[in-house]
Each structure stands twice: as structure tokens, then as C-alpha cells.
Image (cartoon, rainbow, N blue to C red):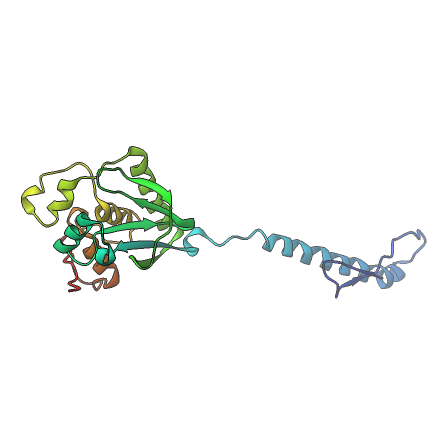
Length: 227
């Protein structure tokens, strides 16, 4: 009697057919049970090996995107940050974080870039957005594209969120505009939202208090007044 190491509760009797004179009746009694048990062991082992290679469909695996919002209230040096925050409180900057601390951001006088970093919870408020694997990859692809293109920061575009006469500027980006566009690529935010009009505080408001599904977006997202 042999015990299969993969299925210890199934015992297989090792009885080779070495008797040429065995009768049909004796063959049925002695050897058919052996072949049946052997077949059951082999089949179950094959099924178990097959199960190991079954993967969850990509749309069923969940990821998340993290939006970090900088509040300059405790910032004693960043005068410009306080000015931006004063125009639309309480936030002045936001960044989009992917897995393993990979963050996409754009700063004044700089360009869109991807880098690994950490966020101090004393200065940054985090909003986590669950999404599918497909949505996650779309957002990451968009940020990677903008980083490779070295898309520049635009002060005019940023100020245009509060000063309509400056809205003629078409090139460049700023932090919340870039984040909104990435989330739109991932279908996390509606495509009819005007990303160029969304400030960091407005984006935080939008993600924290999403509008009902039946409402139609006007394209202008009002900021939530935290003062």
C-alpha cells in the first residue's frame, strides 16, 4: 500500500500486473480497484496544480490612488504657499501617489516628475480613492507620459482659477489640474469637469464629498470653505 505525498488520505496499492495467466474475474477483483484509485489520485493532483495557475481577472483586482493635500497653516517659511492658500483655503498644493511611494507632482518653476517620497501627516491630508487595476494603470500611464514630456508648471494657469482674464493661457499645468486629468483618465472623475478651474482645495472637496450620480456637472467645481 502506497500513500501519495500530495494526498496523504488517499492510499494506492502498488500491484503491478505481472501474471499473464490471471483470469478475467480475478483481474476485475484484484487490479481494477488499483487503477481506479490511481486515476483518482492523478486527476485530483492535476486539478490542484491547475488551481495554482488560476488568476483573478484584472478588473477584479483592486488598487487605490492617494491624493495628498498640503496645508501651509504650520508652514513658517513658505510665503507663496500661504498666498495660494489664502486665495482658496485651506490647501495650496496636491500630489498623486501610486504604489510603493511613487508620487507624481509639479512645483513652481519646475516640470511634472515622478519620484519616490514620503508625506508628513502633520502637513499633508490624504484622501484614498479605491479603483480598479485598469483605472490605476491609466492614471499611472498619464502621469508617466507627462513626466516624460517634462510638462512645465504654468503660473498663469494656476492664477486663472481665480482670475478669469488669465484663462487665455493654454500651455503648461499646475498640481491640481494634473491630478484631475489623471483621475479623469482613470474614469474616477467625470470627463466634463474643467481641470483647469480646479484648485487643490476644490479637488479635496470634490473627492471628500462627491456629487450625486444624477447631478450634471457644470464644469466649475466650487471649493469647500474650511474657514
